[in-house]
Image 1 (cartoon, rainbow, N blue to C red):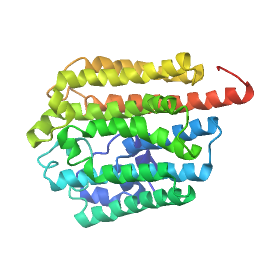
Image 2: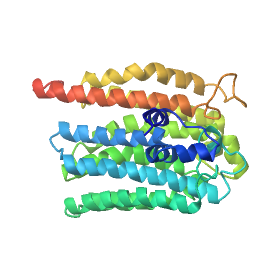
Image 3: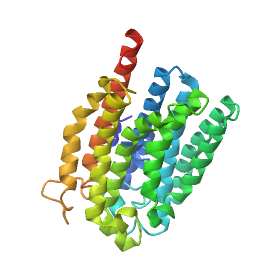
Length: 342
């Protein structure tokens, strides 16, 4: 057990080219690295946010919430493994492509065989499916669960190909993390489509679009690499200048939505304005996005080629943590001060 390595793998990609070193890692470290725990932890945050919103409104049920949160985490882990496999088998990740430069890609670096990959994928996939089946039975085959189950099964094999090649992958990311996960879990816990669904969707977008903007930033980072490989992502199709401005808009939108939900809709109390403690990182991201990406790493920059995506990841992790804390404080105030901020 290497707790230091686990923590490092949660914070940033791990670089390593020696298979003997990889083989010395414990199974948890390998899991965190191969499934990209720097990103999948954001899906766990989405589960926490949805549970807190349901708790505040009197719909919380611990067991299905826990199973759903674990389910979306393992589904996301499965998707990352599938993405790597598809890109590897299609030759995208060869020739020092973007993905293999900043961290370990077990297939590209020859740390795994395809059979090794299959064992890891089946582990993640089976757990995700079992979580979905449990919730399906627990809710007496709720139509909401069935619809979300079908949606998840449909996007798992299609995001990496062909959607990413058609410029639709990024739209799917914004749709799933911004408008499906949090409202979906909330609705399942509520047992129906709630009357305040538009507000729940906006609450989900405030966090989920931050995740989407990080993913978008990563795809802006690799526009030139994707062009050479024939990957027609939406940033490739728009071009870097337009793609950077789209990213500025999505980063800004998270804060605008929070302001709307607090002061106009009064859905949240001012405690959620804690997210503005992340605005410094957000502003640094915006300033970075206003300038073209360098063609090579500046001196001392050790996470190349992740120029836009690394600061965006740091921003959304802080934003998400503050968002969760703000919602918790919102719940506490509403519990002890009836009618607070209504």
